[in-house]
Image (cartoon, rainbow, N blue to C red; front, side, top):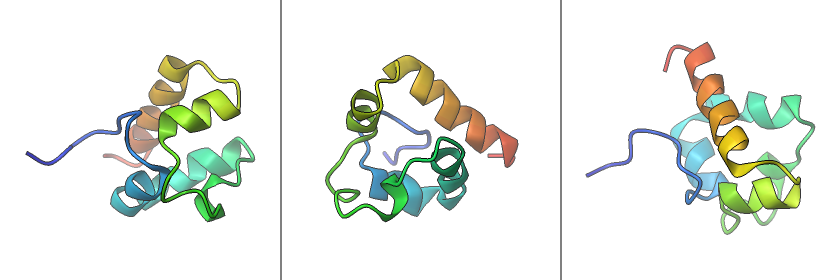
Length: 71
C-alpha cells in the first residue's frame, strides 16, 4: 500500500517528490534540505535531529504545510 501521508522515515527526496509544496516548509525554516546532496539519503527524522527540532513538532509542521495547500 502506498504511503498517503508524510512520515519521519521518508527521505527528504521522497517527501519532496511526492509533495513538492513541502519545499515551502523547509524554506520558511531556512533549511537547505531541498537542494542538499544528502536529500536522497537523509530522512525527515534526521532533519529534525540536525536542526534540533522535536520530531513530533516537525511532523506536525510538515503535515500543516500540506493542509495549507489543500492536501
